[in-house]
Image (cartoon, rainbow, N blue to C red; front, top):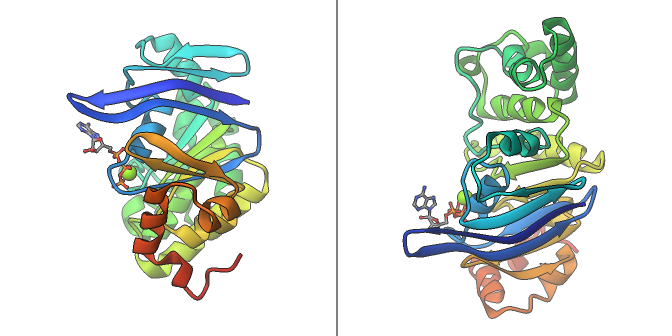
Length: 252
Ligand SMILES: Nc1ncnc2c1ncn2[C@@H]1O[C@H](COP(=O)(O)OP(=O)(O)OP(=O)(O)O)[C@@H](O)[C@H]1O
Ligand SMILES: [Mg+2]
């Protein structure tokens, strides 16, 4: 189990996250939804140590790390267990797909080049990108780049995969291929936190949904509970604004 305790983050007088408590069970796929500017990305970024919160503890396999203390050794401990997929892919432009996936294996995991290469090719195959191994990002579509970014995160064998709006920078016709890959990963039992505005996708892929509003978790339940019977007025307003319940493909 991965546990987040008392996670708080503010930028000047803007309180973005306030005492977030989250227990993540092995294999859970948690969809994180909520209005824009409500702290979803900040939550993932604090967990992945890209942002330093004002306070907060993360516990993983008996390792307990104070996220608010900038300690290099502790950062590495967490980073080795988490993998992040960003909205804008963030691939290294001057490296091929294969080199992008190999990079972390060599630098962070200290693997020998040949071993890293073998593993990276396997991961590229899983996301259907083996034939693009020697291509540079600029010669790949957004969907293809995102699939390479997912392979790069998975190659590190993270205990927790963090995905921050992995499809929102993509042209509509490329969204499906990335969602398909995420669905396959979820079915394999990877533990993940998925921030997405694709409500139907969140609903179908998650086994737990969290609604974040103004830095607080105001709903936490099964997709059915949260989407069909939200407790909080803000959640109800959010759904009615998105008129999710009127979408024809919305099936329980
Ligand atoms: N580096 C920063 N400096 C100052 N304020 C920031 C910084 N990063 C985020 N914020 C503020 O923190 C709040 C939460 O931002 P965050 O990006 O976590 O929201 P979000 O829920 O991911 O929104 P969206 O759905 O639009 O991606 C916003 O008010 C934002 O302006
Ligand atoms: Mg965001």
